[in-house]
Image 1: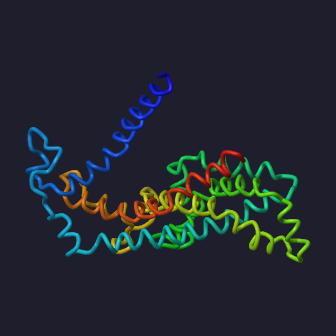
Image 2: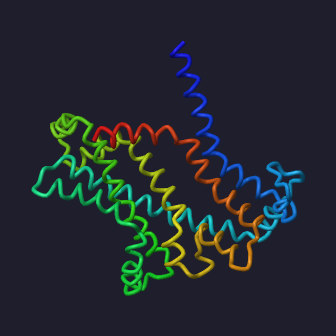
Image 3: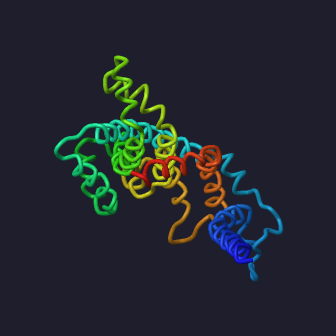
Length: 275
């Protein structure tokens, strides 16, 4: 009976947590199908009486949101590629080669994640401005890659540490050097960690707002987060447009997560927790 009671308690707690987590998603979708009258109705209707498609129709006719989504996917995709490439190489070097400042490098990579981005936005802006990279995707890609690199190195190192070094030695006996052992042996075994880092980094970069809104001023180069925020002002907001754009903007992360979610848990538990 005690076991059954614990199971029921876990189910109830899981349901409550799911409601808390999913309610903002429901609210976003709910508001996207409402007009101004239904949105501010008293008493409030949690289920729309008449589905209003005005926001979606306007978005499809305008097409601006799809340009912003394309910009977000491009910047995030390139940043993730650079992030995974640099992080895997750095983590392999830290994991496989012993040198004097090995622990210092690991601690520094973790410590870099403790710095609030708001504290570095001014020096970052000044540096990119001196390099003529303001209002350019290149500058934003560099920033995104740098901000997530420390966390990615930590995840990858933890995973590499759990791959037996004997596999590297066997590859060396077969004539491989360190780089070939990395490319042919270690990296293929690290697919779960790579996909985990890919997803987590992509979500962070895709949803990033502060640097995107500061470094990019051209409306044609706006990312989705900046474009959606432009719908609100001190005077008011077009809520139907804002929330319909938010729903469309959220589709790509949801699709990626749906197909690759199992790799997040596998990559984190196999590497970061044990490492």
